[in-house]
Length: 496
Image (cartoon, rainbow, N blue to C red):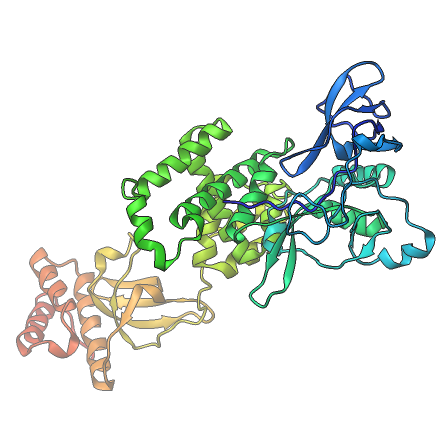
């Protein structure tokens, strides 16, 4: 359960005269500059104060306090309750960060805030902003913030310079094991950057959350509330929220090993599969999509996170912001490549400028470079062992290399059927043979080839083929004698 601790003090009271300084784009018939009287005490709602204001035109509106500035502070004593210096919405907070309109910085103070973030701290009466370089930018949290388009970024900077920073930055106040307090930024990364750059004071709201998982969930929920998300960003954030919810169900409220038995008893009726289904159903209902969409979003988020682990968070942000356009199907394929061959993936992203080009480079089939020098020597005895359809009918027959072509990976190969030109090295398997066996193989293969030139009867061809399948050193005296008889029959005179 999230425990939210506010550190802001309301600055309006009943009877104060106020002016509207900001109007959200979704609000109609309300203009900046309208004035009126506060008619209610500030009410704390979802970490912000809201008040009822009776406008000069007679309308009664409810508005966030930070959208107002006080233009007349004379308030009847009865309607202005006193607040002590330490008064906050939580009794444990020693300081308060106010949402009051911040006075302009004097020239002497501008140098002090030029290079570090400024936290506006108030204790009772407002005073000038103090230096507080305590806000931590967490890389994982920052990577979940959608990237502003250049035009959006310029517009935000222009509004901040003209109207100041009205929306407070939200930080997660966390205590480390050594007792140090850390303030990790959850909302306002772009505002912090621009306020620091332009020396614009800003307000800070601290919230307390039980753990990092809860902080991530808060950040994702906050981003999902934005209206200008791209479909890819929306899908990714829904997927992240899905996984965070599943993780929280596995360990609800920080249950540890000491309370595991109680947890199992309490959750006895819900299996892990049921939890997964209920999580998808709940999110689907919340975002008005189907359960299948949530499950696909979860896989999309997983695949993008896998890419981010291999390539860095910037790659994920570019994909989500459409600086690099890659389909979800290709994202899945690239995620698989990230696990099997991360170096090839990195090379594709470094060389490719567009999504389509990156995918083509990543899955481009590379033909291994052939060894241009033939692997065997003239006289070597080899088996034919080829995958080539034109050659594999002769697999299992032996022969000898009779000629090698310099700088080429093929040879003239002599076997029982005659000389085959252009036999590549990968189509042959060497047979171990000493010098005498090599000489014998050369004699026999020449005798068989000469017999084949005579177009012998099929029975002779069958015998020749049988001899060609036996190792040279294993030929019997009867087989040698049979070859001699065939040579006599066809009138072949041996020269050896």
